[in-house]
Amino acid sequence: MRVLLVYPNMMGMNMLPPAIGLFASLLRQRGHAAALFDTTNYPQLEGGFDSDKLKSENLNARPFDDSLLRRYDKSSSPQLDFAAKVREFSPDLIAVSATEDMYPIGLHLLEGLPADRPRVVLGGVFATFAPELALRKSCGLIDYAIKGEGEESLLELCRRLEAGMDPAGIPGLWMLRGDGSLVRSDLPIPVDADRLPLADYDDFEESRFYRPMQGKLWRMFPVETFRGCPYTCAYCNSPSQMQAYKAEDKKYFRMKSLDKVRAELRHLVGKYKADSIYFWADTFLSYRDEDFERFCDMYSEFKLPFWIQTRPETITEEKFKRLKEVGLLRVSFGLEHGNEAFREKYLLRKVPNARIVERLKIPARLDIPFSVNNIMGFPNETRGLVFDTIELNRLVQSDGINAYSFTPFKGTPLRDLAESLGLIHPDYIVRSITKPTLLNMPQFPPEQIEGIRRCFVLYVKMPKSRWPEIERAEALTPEGQRLWKALRDECLAKHMNYGGYAKEEDIGLVDVVNQQGAPAAG
Image (cartoon, rainbow, N blue to C red; front, side, top):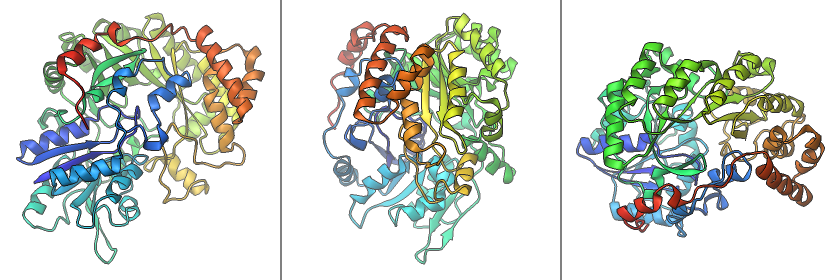
């Protein structure tokens, strides 16, 4: 069969997706033809929105030179280009992988196809947690949704469609009959990641191999180490995934073997010239002590700079010294909220602030750069509670502070709470985590949440004597914008300690581009 993989995405929103590279490899391994349509390089999506640039403007991340990335911008219509790609490639099946907030972009692409379009299957996080909603909201544009891991299910769907067989009953596959009735099936058996082929990223444009970090662009590739997460945070959908598989007596959380990780690293360095690695795991330090030591021994073969995310309570000085020895570039930690009682009750995270602060002194003492993630606008939160989060951040020596408004994704316990409180309709599709909140709470309305979100770093980094000025800059008015811009520039110059940003010639990107040729037309 001929399968067109589709990745709806916005600029700076999601890095190179390992699932797409894996599906391309699996399809080709089984004798199918595969192609890709990726919307990342269309700046007109969402009015020119660029998540990475927005973060740097709001001081959530270091400024960086994006001139290399901008070379790949497309001024044409993504919908028209997609229709042209379908005519050119003539697929038998269109396979869309989308998160809930990117799902509308996928629908927009499909709306531009003629009535005799190929069949369409949706996979990914949104299809896993809301397959019926995804099917019905598409109004006939999507024929199938795959709930759970789709590696084997997609291949079986291809086999049955090619043979003219009914796809009903494929593990994880949901579909609507002509009369509107729903056909569902049990979750697929979790795949053995060690038996999967190496990812094929050949279809992506060159710019997708680069990622801003530490003020530079790195040729950074993802490597998965775990599937699932042992923690149960209420704002995350990993616990729901674990519970869904557990309900069917299937184990979801598992570690990829270090031999497989080594093979993937060699593949990425050898074929794609990776100069850094993004370890794809909800909590990297889920490793047992003996496995952690084996990982470090294995990775000492490469010693490429690498990025991880983990939880503050997993930090030990010994482990972070070891990680630094083998190339640790940067870490992202989830703080999320600074009020212990609120965090335990609503976020299901029971850890004292004192422990968080103490543990985060370790990477600071070891001179390991790290960022912290914060969320505001949770159901039942107030503006005053956000200042507990600000105060906690003021005790931490991070050089990156992410501040997001709460996004009630399907599959998270806090989405269920928001629906039960009447804050969001069960059928509503959420927007990006960097967009203003969807929840209209009387005690903490959207304009207050958005105002304090954009001023979050100012409150953390600037002296408290300046807080009255910062509060005035929260106002979403021309005067508030003027005040915010002046304070933002002052904070960047005096309190962020970033220095300048790296130019392409400082990190060898010009040479890389010259060796690999001009950007592909698209």
